[in-house]
Length: 144
Image (tube, rainbow, N blue to C red; front, side):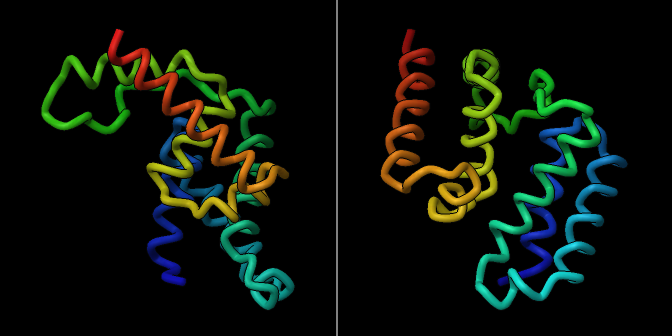
């Protein structure tokens, strides 16, 4: 596991949740400090699950609630088409907080399905179906 790459991904996740660079840096650092202090999860090969679980809980603590803020203009560009960028942002806003988080973790951060399934306490099959449903809603919204 490339720690630098995972650090960047955890930071991106924290920034997505908190919308504050300084706070996201602090939470990311705290996440990795806790990971370094815990041998248990490293020995079991569950490092990613542990990192995202800790980051998720720390972000919720910082927010004082688990509510995601509306997306800002920091949504990555959808190619070179500004209209598609605006439409995608609007469609993402229509998703539930958890669905937006799933899309971000799976497709922006590339978190493996087995890690997400453990993080959300669902089977891989259920997670695949849910992601497929989310993508269909996004696709249908963009086509409309």
